[in-house]
Image 1 (tube, rainbow, N blue to C red):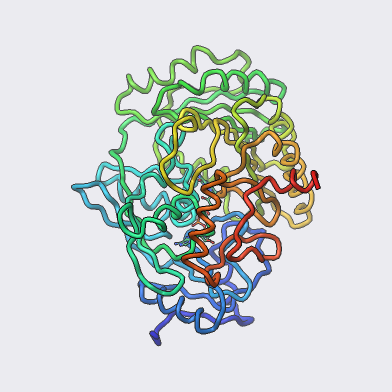
Image 2 (tube, rainbow, N blue to C red):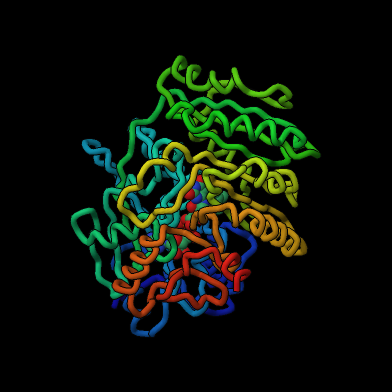
Length: 462
Ligand SMILES: Cc1cc2nc3c(=O)[nH]c(=O)nc-3n(C[C@H](O)[C@H](O)[C@H](O)COP(=O)(O)OP(=O)(O)OC[C@H]3O[C@@H](n4cnc5c(N)ncnc54)[C@H](O)[C@@H]3O)c2cc1C
């Protein structure tokens, strides 16, 4: 075992506290207390840490970007592997495959790729780590048309739960490769490297936005729902409910971001929305020049550092009355910084998915991001989210792992057979439950994993 393992054992020290939660995005920090935190700088540190955990009969948790809303990386009595100092990015210019360490953020990756005329459709928030994001599937830029970010994973390197170092791809250790695209925080190993297919970058990123007062919620929503499925295929579409800075009233903003290589193509893509949007906007722009950097800055402003957060989400059934079901969420936000999102997923949601664990989707992605400052508001804000989700869940197929907290709500995260296969693979590759897995209430799920059912609905029936 390496004597140089960069490990900090549990203590009352500031150093331990910083290692425990310093890189956790959500300032509603957990009390949970890992046995130790290791900040590896090389693969052998990761292997040594897994072997140490086996020897001590304790669990391993992993942190890449620290952005899971429920701080999944912070687990009682586990050894936390914090990959923040484990860094690698390099591009094979011939194939466009970029090798990146899991703590690489979307902004880091795209700043690196931009110099080479390429991009990767990573997460919208600049600072989300590739590790958590890709393992869940990854709802990246223009996901509705380009598909899930994990579909661009060509291969991964993994330290397994028994401390072996292996390469996984379509032809090698393909079971783990299957699981890595959709297992989320239940992946039974530590990913040390992603091999990602990048794409050529776009010279003309443009956006349009149409803001309406809350009283026009139905008008705005019905309009965007009517044009989204066959809209231009390089354009992503979202509707957001928020209090814009300086306003005392909720606004509903419909946003279009297009990725093109000429002004003419961008204008053509966005014209349909410009021509069809309902009258009555309180704010509006058309085909404005933007960039990934600018979009990242806007996203960072919407989800600022240093706040308390809770998130939940649902894939609303394709045939549901979406405007009606989301109305309460969109018009009753509990705090000035909270926002509700509808994100168009069609037409990708209608295409058969690749053979991978990710297997839950619908045309309509709905998420709540509740943001507040003070502990006194925890209960009120969390209850608001729970109440909204109680009404919405029955109209949903399931949910996305990335915006979920299994301590609060268990639901369907995979198709039935994919859920069963995933849990079989987890048991096979980590029979002792060395890797922490899904953080449910009391952190007891272990090798059993998640039930993959609408638990609230199931409990009502009982
Ligand atoms: C502000 C904000 C914006 C977001 N925007 C988006 C978005 O646009 N699209 C989207 O899809 N999601 C988005 N998310 C959700 C985000 O993708 C998830 O929270 C994701 O888990 C964060 O990944 P991370 O590596 O930063 O988190 P971490 O907390 O570091 O990791 C989460 C968990 O994933 C597992 N994990 C991470 N790395 C590894 C690894 N190397 N090996 C094995 N297991 C690992 C571990 O269980 C870990 O605890 C957003 C989240 C935030 C806070």
